[in-house]
Length: 488
Figure 1 (cartoon, rainbow, N blue to C red):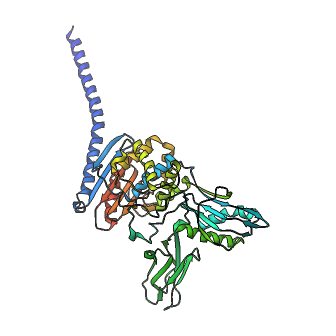
Figure 2 (tube, rainbow, N blue to C red):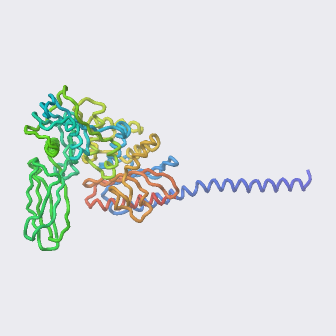
Figure 3 (cartoon, rainbow, N blue to C red):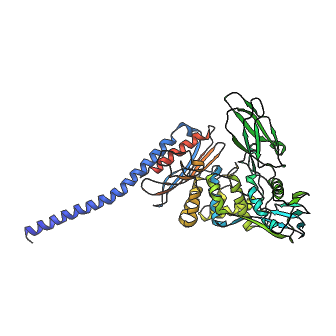
């Protein structure tokens, strides 16, 4: 071979080596840069966690890239923690999977006896079906059948059938001193106005009692108003109920400046079924159907005739469940899950077994956790960031249609729900969709965020055992979310 030929081959080999080196460098750089960014993410989150706050407080974090299917950050991800309202993630996803968005919470009206000459000679039964949002207006809807039948008088009694649920009016591990907050609603299969009453108040004449109105008004409630209108500039009006006596006397006390604007407050109501029956009686009178006998609870006579129905789907309530973190909706979802698979009266434990089925679907073991209610109000609940992330990932990958419903039900940072006032003017605003969770000494945030590189991330942050205000913990959650939103 000539020297010129050898030189040509050498040049070709040299060029080929350069070409291969460039290819290797290109692909290596593609892997290097994400590793570099991932390292920055670790450093940035660890810097947040270096705060003295975490000397005594505990935190568990799990972050997963749903787009590339790889873990991005873990710390104490298996640590069992009280989830507070982050438990609603498990409850609402279970509702979507095992009830379905078209599941009906049905409230039914039946009558016994017969109708003759505009008179019902028999009893009425209002049968609860776990509807968490049944309202006074819905009671009017239930009466349409009676009106169409021409009924003007009822010669019989009115009963509430609450036999689909056990008699426990609160969840296990709920705090007695949460009463009379609407965050601790009394539970029944027959609910009304979220088992609470609205208290509207405004100033009157100086040195006189302020003006107070209960909405809706009902003979079932009594009002004791000792709040006074004052000339000063400060106001301190509080509402309560004689909850220690398990009574329904509404108490309004304190003072209100004479130039204050009208305002409202709310307290829960003891014994919602009887409250509902009293409002139902008022609805009868308003609709010119007269009744003068007893109201009580009783199980439906099997020979009764259906005369009215009111349905509300799970799809109708899931947004309020998650965006407003509504405890009553979460608990009624748990009981509906129990009722679908068990004989009445159902228990919370039977509902939890359905949630256990969801945990099994994620590949985790239900025996590793403790769940006792559907809302997260209980301090007995113990789950982990790993479990929450497993549920968030499961519905994302396996149930795209249901995921869309679930995703839209989550609060949006800086926009609505319990995240409306958080993460404003950051990369997280109108980006992070996540469920909050707060009880004494607990703050959690879990959901989804779109990273700066376009990837969809799932995350769970659970902070426990602190004695400061919850807003301190929430500030750290927001910082971590911003780091994830800026991740490239």
